[in-house]
Structures are given as structure tokens and as C-alpha cells.
Length: 318
Ligand code: BTN
Image (tube, rainbow, N blue to C red):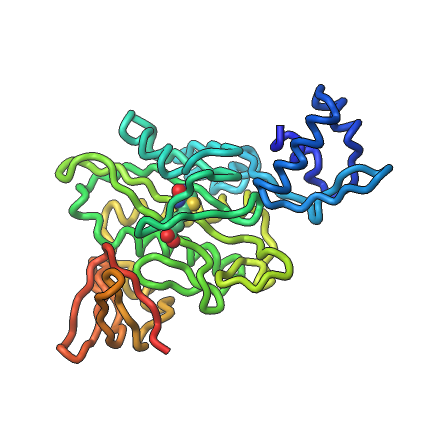
């Protein structure tokens, strides 16, 4: 019911509780309860004015399969099967289940809300409805898992290409974050399904902050921070177009042909960085780019070291 009421309010104008109740075929009390859920569980402010009804602070832009499809490149649109869920535990979790049960190559699942969204290194990924583009794709590679090193960097590069084309000057942080104005704009969670030797099925989950909450100083970035106002449907189509190109090439060549472009967009090239391997273990050095398999090269007091994508996190040293 909360989603139905939120949809009824999504133009940002006043709507009377009575009219919404009539349209949805329910009582005014149910509408009132739904507004309560929208405010408390979804953290979306609803203005309520006697005699006028309810309204949201700003219009909401919903994900829509037909609109997403209309932005896909015609030559490659057939690759994608696009689905949208209002609410789900995690789009990655759902696609991992589907991957193990014959889900099709090119399946895309986007969600308005995740109750158990997951990030790298066991972290959570949480976002308010409408603020973030959250989706996962299922991609089946001819290569085995062992040959997928560098995939997360290639995915980051595909997103960066699309976002820069739209006008957002994003940079890449090894292994697979996107930064805007030095703050995290998007994260990528890649999970593998299947056995190590056979063709690999990969679930690529992406969370990208689109709208910054008003009047909140946030530690992360959103596209609106650089003045880019783009609908999440248009954005998803643009990202899928770029991903299709990069993933198809990657299936043939691996990461090597992307390494130079990745380094040009790297936020930390030739800068001092700290690599952490848990709470108590870290190594400091100068970031010197990436190898052809996506490994990070760092000059440390002990000489040049090579770090592989895994349970490592990186930050710039002040
Ligand atoms: C990270 O930076 O730690 C990765 C974040 C990935 C979040 C996305 S949101 C869509 C997909 N579903 C999930 O549960 N996680 C990814």
C-alpha cells in the first residue's frame, strides 16, 4: 500500500486522502497508515495540510522498463532483459539465485528499494527511494573464473565512460569505486557463480547516487553535486549501452586493452595511498597504475608491490 500511495503522490502536488482512497479502493485510514510508513520506513517527508491533502517535497522519478528500453542502442538492445522491482532484499542476491537456476545472459534487475542491499567487504548498501540507481546484471562469460581478473575495473571504466559522456567528471578508485569531487559516487559488487574451470556466470551489482538529499552535508557524492539532473531511466540505459560494449570486448580480450584508459581516469595515479587488509594491517606507498590483469602497482619502501583485487581497500594518504 505504501508504494501505491507514494506513486499517487509522485508528481509533488497536493492530493486529498479521500481521492487517493477512492482511486486505490481502500479506506482513508489505510492511506494515513501508508503515509506513516512512507515517512518512517522510507524516510521520505510527506507534507500534510488540512483541506488540501498530502504532498511530497519534490516529484519522484520512477524506474520504468519501457522508458529504460527506449534509451538502449538499437543494435544491442536485444542483449538485455530488463526487470524492475519496487522492493527486494538485494538485486545481487536475487540474480545469484537466478544465475544458479538458468537465468538468461543479459538479465537486468533494478530496484526502487532494497531491504538488505550489500556492498563490498561485507558492508551494507542503503539508499532512499529515488535517490540512488541500484541494479544488477547477470552476464555469462566464455572465460573461466580464473580469467576474470580485472573485470571489476573494466565495469568501473564502462560506468565512467557513460557518466563522463553525460557531463559528470567522475574518476576511478582502485579497484572499482567511482568518485566525484573526491567523494564516492558509485560502488560495484561483483559476485561469481559456477565452477572455477567452466564458463563463468557473473552478477554485477551497481549502486550510483543520483540525487543528494537536500540540506545534508554528506560524506558521499551524488550526480546532482555536479549539476547533472538526469532521470534514472535515461541513466540506466546509458550505463547498459556502455557496459554492453565493454563486457563484450572483455569476454574476448580480458582487461589489457582497457588498462591505459583506466589509468588516465584514475583518481590516485602517482599519489600516496594506504592499502588496508583488515583493521590492523596496512601498507603505504605511491600508486603507480595498474597491470594488464587489473592488479594495482604500488612503490613501497620495500620496492614495487603488486596487489590483486580482493579483500583490500585503498585510500589516499593526506
Ligand atoms: C560497494 O561499493 O561496496 C558496492 C556497492 C554495491 C551496491 C549495489 S546496489 C545494487 C546491488 N545489489 C546489492 O545488494 N548491492 C549492489
